[in-house]
Image (cartoon, rainbow, N blue to C red; front, side, top):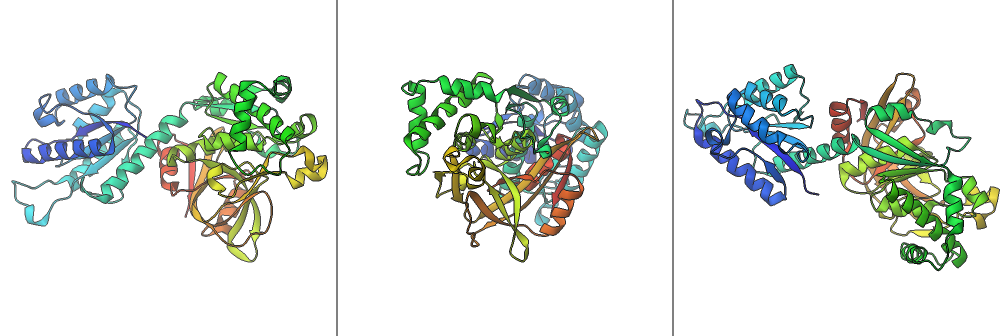
Amino acid sequence: MSSTLGIIIGNRDFFPDHLITEARNEVLNIFKNKGLKPIILKDSDTKLGGVETFLEAQKCADLFKSHKDEIEGILVVLPNFGDEKGVADTIRLSGLDVPVLVQATPDDLDKMQPSNRRDAYCGKISVCNNLYQYGIKYSLTKSHVVSLSGNEFDHELNKFISICKVVKGMRRVRIGAVGARPQAFNTVRFSEKILERHGISVTTIDLSEVLGKAKELNDDSKKVKDSMNKISGYGDSTDTPSEKLLQLARLDVVLNDFVETNKLDATAIQCWTSVQENYGCNVCTSMSMMSENMLPSACEVDVTGTLTMYAMQLASNSPSALVDWNNNYDQDEEKCVLFHCGNWAKSFLPDLKISTAPILGSVFGEEKTHGALEGRTPANPLTYGRISTDDNLGKIKCYFGEGELTDDPLNTFGTRAVAKVPKLQKLMQYVCRHGYEHHVVMNASNTGEILNEACGNYLNWETYIHS
């Protein structure tokens, strides 16, 4: 996924010129190799293309302003001590409110003479001090100084790009809420007003409208046939009667039209009990396909659940799934069962089967629950987390952490996984004491730090990272 970053090369005049030239060439080469678009001063715009004086800061800020709709973040490169005011003034004058990564190049012990000395170790502290004074949010590399060339900075840059994606994406999210939450699920209540204040909009539609439109569709229409082929090719549907596959296809067409018409990024759907009683199938297959296609869809009208799915998707560039913290795993206090009846994206289910939902089937008859998925998620990395609105405090809060999905035996139905989470009992204490939902989101990645930095530092949400 391509990105556009503004680049500030900090300079201090009495350090060697060649350090600036080398750093500029090096960073431009890195961007070229990674397919990134740099917004950077020409070496003829200022002395060597660096930023030190206020006039140079103005030039760089004007350049950034002319690309304000493109720039997702700013990279500050310090080949030497740099000028702290030049860096801070540039960002302030640009008017950009994007993530900032501060890099400083280390000195070599055999190059400490005036002709090669950098002092960026010290200069980074001064730059950060000024950014702090100016009220500009910024990110740091794990090592205080890190060379531009090498795997460590490559990892830091990749992480920063993901942070930028999350911040940009979460400031302008459009979520579709299909139907009312199930009566028994107060747990998925949320505040539309708090979300709207943070740039997150919710578009609603009554479930009866969706079901009514689905019933009116002609089975021979091109859209229904295309959807039928899509569903048949999505997983093993041999146990699903053809008339039920047609039901799923009609419902899928209407839901996708709703998403497209309203330019939605994600959906949260009332998946029981009305759809079974009044339409005669489960909506899980459509939800899974949307999530697999990077349009996350959460069950039980869990709007902040699907918001979490979207955040994790942005951080990892891979699908997410809404799950229940569902069962203990025998006597192992660091393992638990993750479950839903099932609508997880296909990426989590290599053995995906379009099936029925036994729990709902015990109430409505299993023939009315075709469309639920069945499958087991194999061993994978795990990032988990939850974003929620806290109406009592008028804020958005979230928690994130990492663990692993395991191949431990699990003999049950639905979409399911076994998770191993360090200090799981402490995490469950936190979840319960802070009033979080029983729904959590999982993603097969290691992106907890990215989400914590994006949501806590830049979006200014109350964030807890479990470790």
